[in-house]
Image 1 (cartoon, rainbow, N blue to C red):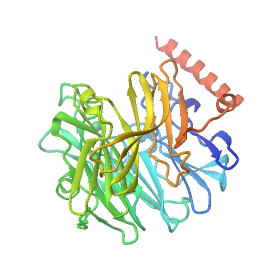
Image 2 (tube, helix red, strand yellow):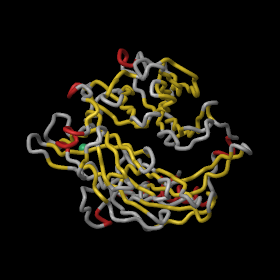
Image 3 (cartoon, rainbow, N blue to C red):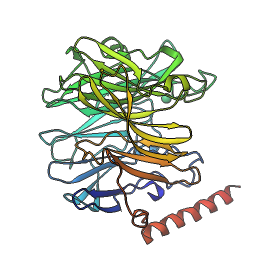
Image 4 (cartoon, rainbow, N blue to C red):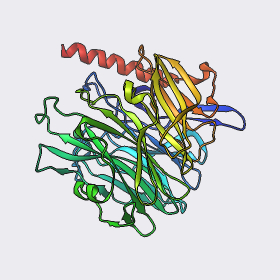
Length: 430
Ligand code: ZN
């Protein structure tokens, strides 16, 4: 919402009624007069419902900064990672902020286990920071200190630092499963392009939260935090094409045998800071080896179409992707289905199409109603605002536009005040 504060909306499938959006907290992002024009304040919000029905959101984190003290597990960037909880169970109308998590953090991913324990995973700062988790055994009211799982480390062979991007999901029983890719975090002067988003390869590991032990896909024990060397030796899923191809990590889910499947986006490096368009590709563990690497959207490899998506596993060989991409100028969200374990995919039901749309997709919602599997943001060329869709097997859930675009008087005043202050700041700077 305005000035990057988090808002929550709800849809009731039985009554077909929307409520909200309600403001759920105040972000440190979006309110700084000195921030540059090109803002990267994603804040990566995430949400869960605890065993008592309270709704938690974790938001506004972009690595933390000096105002919050020293980051002992990495470097800093901006703002604070924050946590808010609904005042009443299953009710989004009122919220309170808790002071239970560390300010350093970004890419929040929260999981509630069957016994009610909550695990919050995140990167503990900017690129050169460990990935950690904090555990709560009291429904998110307090959290234990962060525990490092993926280690950031200066390389001795090149002018770069080891960095990671992880996707965390619930596995079987007390397990948490994690897929990740490796970011070679170049020093600014080490390459012609300066620092880039160069990332490579796919990795996988499992956390048994009951025994507090970690293992690779073969079942060998792992010592935390994992270094790049051990990650390469014990947890590698696939080399995704060397320096000529860059990755953008996707998601992981287990099939009915308890074997992991991994989606990862792979694309040719075209010399840009971001490499180039990337194609969602699928890998699966057969019990003895990793298979796959084929792009889900078949034409992608030839024409370089950028795709993103998450997937549902119906059986070890039957995999349904919800894929977002652009085709002949149209932004499309469509199912792509495989019946041969991900070797080939065919277009299934199309769920959303919009002229010139560029999409941002969330991961699939856990325990979702089939009518509401994913949230899709449409970037509008003419506006700073995004259109948000709740999309499921019957397309987007509809809503009266007038009731969807509600800003309270307080919100509007707040926004106006900030804009005026920002104008004044720019004028004085000149
Ligand atoms: Zn970096």
